[in-house]
Image (cartoon, rainbow, N blue to C red; front, top):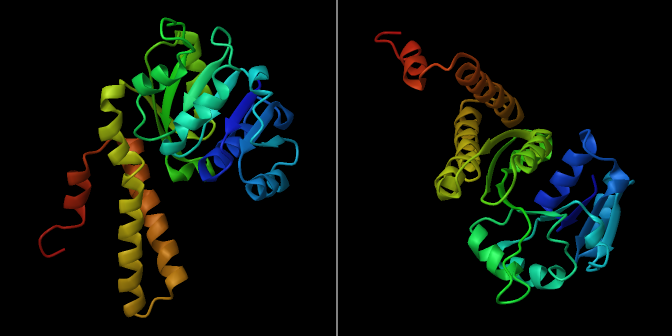
Length: 239
């Protein structure tokens, strides 16, 4: 498998690292394209085997999977740059741009107004834990085969957990996962401040809270228990 990742920032770089650490491809099978040469230089230091290009899309056609890892407002510009280089019959396109629908991307991909042949297209919403291989990643598609779905699921399982869902549920689920991770961090930050006021060193407080949060997550995942039941165990009257 050969991959092109357009965008070498936090998400694009994390996906490149996840692919390198998996079994789907070798580092030399990954190309990362970005307008910022400094970003590519840093990524190349971490992943010496990958290929990098500054705003050069000439080799996009050589990839099996093309990943758009750019900000939502840049999606249209990138598609204009690459759509006539793509082979819609042989390539899969993945977008991680939040808020840009499959329908919108399909309209941008049309090479002619009366041409409806489009590539298999996936919308993928990871969260920032993808950088440590622990993302809760949401995936939607409307024109991929079962084999193509399984390939993309397998790819993102190397970077955490995945959920394949109907696109209509993607926005609400994004609030739980992609945005939701920030609420957990808010809780940790607030509790750290409280701990510090009580004399606990900040780094110690952060570690205690992180392991407590991890333990709570493992309880839910391994037992399937209702959160209210676990709350009751630590809020008994007089306890």
